[in-house]
Image 1 (tube, rainbow, N blue to C red):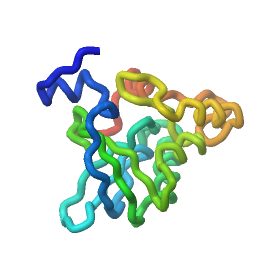
Image 2 (tube, rainbow, N blue to C red):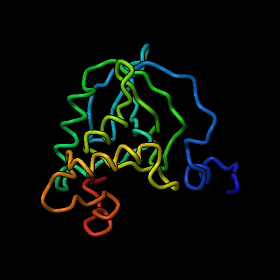
Image 3 (tube, rainbow, N blue to C red):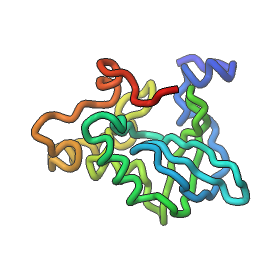
Amino acid sequence: MKRWHGVGLLCLVWPWHLWAQEAPWTAWVSWVMDGDTLLLVPQGHKEPVTVRIDGIDAPETCQPGGEASRDAMVRLALRKTVQVQAFGQDHYGRQVAQVRVDGVDLGAEMVRSGMAWAYRYRVGAGPYAKLQKLAQKDRRGLFGAADAAMAPPVFRKFHGTCHVN
């Protein structure tokens, strides 16, 4: 894969997890937008930062399982101090990062519990693919429903996004 040097192009064609990592930072979770997006207030700052959890894709809040996924993230992270390893920004301007609470990788936990899919932009299943297979096999979370859970990209293709700009 060719690496592009234009910042705008970089976000769209180069997987962010391959970028040089930023220094880790600490933040407080002020809001959970959905199962894979958090609003964080970095330590020593007043302005919040929107962070997209790397390696997962949670259901849209308006799709079946979306509220359950968001609620699972609320239980894991809301109003807690987290450690953030950011990799850059996505094409929506969100920081893309691995986020941990007391050493627990939130992305891995969401996939392990069946509340999100293992997914990484332009790469496919990403680092949590084995955890997803186990969650599906054990019918945990979204994978326990009688009807097969619809992956967010498929849902968006047929129904659009829940978010109104």
